[in-house]
Amino acid sequence: MSLDFSFLTLKVINNIILTGLIFSIKLTLISMVLGIILGTLLAMMRLSKYKFLSSFALAYVTIIRSIPLVMVILWVFLLIPLFIGRSLGTEYSAIITFTLFEAAFYAEIMRAGIQSVKRDQANAGYALGMNYFQCMGYIVLPQAFRNMLPVLLTQTIVLFQDTSLVYAIGAFDLLKGFSIISKNFNRPVEAYILATIVYFIICFGLSYLVKRIQNRVRIVR
Amino acid sequence: MFTLDWSFLSKKVVGTQTYFSWLMTAWETTLTISLFAFVIAFTLGFLMGVLRTTQNKYLVLIGNIWTEIFRNIPVLVQIFLWYFVIPKIFPIFSKLPAFALAVIALGLFTSSRISEQVRAGIQSIPTDQRYASLALGLTTYQSYRFVLLPVAFRLVLPPLTSEAMNVIKNSSVAFAVSIAELTMYAIQVQEETARGIEVYLVVTALYFISALIVNLISIVVEKSIQIPHFIGGKK
Figure 1 (cartoon, rainbow over the protein chains, first blue to last red):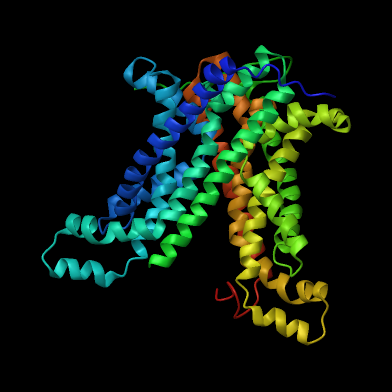
Figure 2: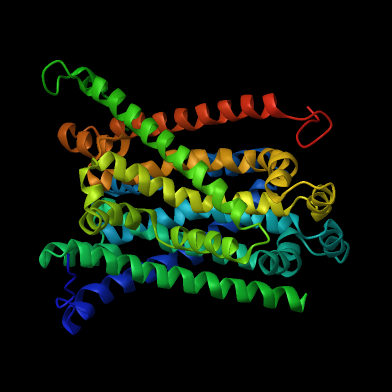
């Protein structure tokens, strides 16, 4: 069979592929930032001496991690209208889903990060008269982030790959762009070959970058 | 706030099939896809992981390329690739049902992750063991078969368990090519019966139970192969 990529005009790239790509990147970045913040809070709760905080965080992380992401996407999309009385649209629904879902994974990473900081450091902070939040904010968390930076970024690449699953609720992301092309021009073979190449280049490039960052962090320390 | 109404489960869909029996078939499909995919993933992942630890740079390269390719493409894109593209380019695959294509896609995707675990497992064994076995006159094959792999296999069992759970979770993307597994059931029955909460609850519960089953199996397997006073042999 012969491949025909003639449908790939500047207009198609601009209107369909770039629109999808921009949403995918937006979704990834927003969920990464919110997910890391929420995940860090969950990790702090998990390590808290208050039993109800740590059991809540443990339950949250365990439950989220044993449900398929597609089901979480569907759940949020179904529940939001029931709670607020109207639909938020697929895009906001996706952002909320990914923040809640990835927070569970970032929480596990941050927990390992916090535990990788020596206890003496926190004790030294307390001895200087800092309270819990000062101690966390000025001493423990900066080191935890530094130690876990490569893992956090690797998880973000997984997050970027996962954004393709918003297909389930029909949000306009990068993959949706290619599936529109496949239908409009009746060229599924070419469209999905392109999708594969684009996703591969982005993810491979990002993981190469993470490897370089990993080496830099290692040299400095 | 909501009143749950489970009566849809006993309603008839077509013929004698009820929403409940359809649910059970869907669960079975999810488990079958996951099982076959895991067998493929385990076989190829183990092979590729081992290749990446050999001393032959070409074998290492093959293993690395394999892993990078299947790890850096989202699983849904890989499903579409196998469903829409591969059968057109290689007509031999056009005879396979969508189910088999989804199994292959999921299996290859997971194989890259297992390959990572296996490579890390083998590399965490002190190099002395490899050298010692070679010094004893074992061939490369023998040193893997009798020295490295028995230890590596036990080391990678815990991560393999979580990969097995991931396969079950990832099998949910097969809904995109209309395979009647649990997620497809959730989407379709939610539309037909408008009992979204109940449908999603029961489907989510089945995913939980599936993960639990995998966990139980792995506990049994880990117990039965542990070496006393060795990895995991403390219990």
